[in-house]
Image (cartoon, rainbow, N blue to C red; front, top):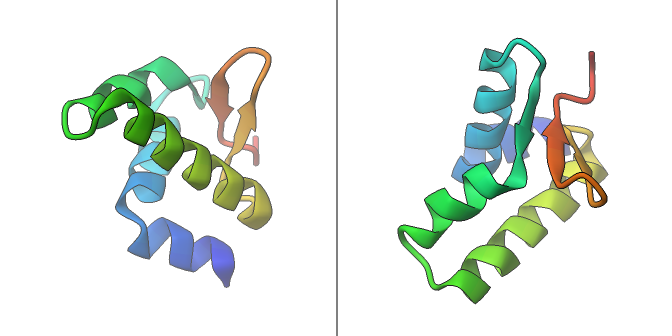
Length: 77
């Protein structure tokens, strides 16, 4: 249930999942989303927001994030 709510009611989480679903390798660099968020937020708020969504996605299994490579993955491939 957490996964469904996160994907459908948290716009950023749903956006990240949609990007992963559209890509052939089902992977995307964190920088892509950092830059998008920084169009609307200061860099620290953007980083904090993305970190929160990463933590929630890990708890729900919506997608994966590798801190070492700074890459998102679909997690179900």
